[in-house]
Image (cartoon, rainbow, N blue to C red):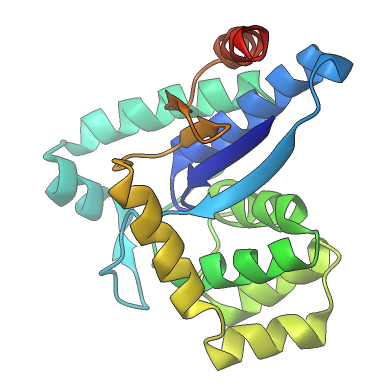
Length: 209
């Protein structure tokens, strides 16, 4: 079974969804042999390098009040804790394109999952800028990647066309929100679902196959 996990590093529901999906795969165990691919999506492609205040940005983008944003963040913290992910304070949101370039390269090295987890922890857990070269380097080292090669990727702009092509491909399939979980290129599960929802869907897809 091939699973394409389409997500953005800046998306809190993606952190919830990935950990919930992994809990579901643990429950399924040896019943399924799964090949995971982490695909890029940009929620905030136009953000400047210095980022934006997160409450101000979300308020303008979604028309939500600070109180509504705080309530949503509290709910997300609870959902994260339930699947083993600890959210910390996040005061800003940033551009994530360079993080996606590094994730593309990490996939070629067989360390994409490790880097994805490191990036999610850095931003959602520690409030660090996932567009910063220093943060990207720290995450690369944490993921067990070669630091010199990672630095070369970050500084060179390498894989930019690949990432843009992947984003365009998934948009052409109708993906406009994340996380989106595509199973075997045919079945779509959207949102940060609980583990039991992912488990039931995966078992049903496998049975039909």
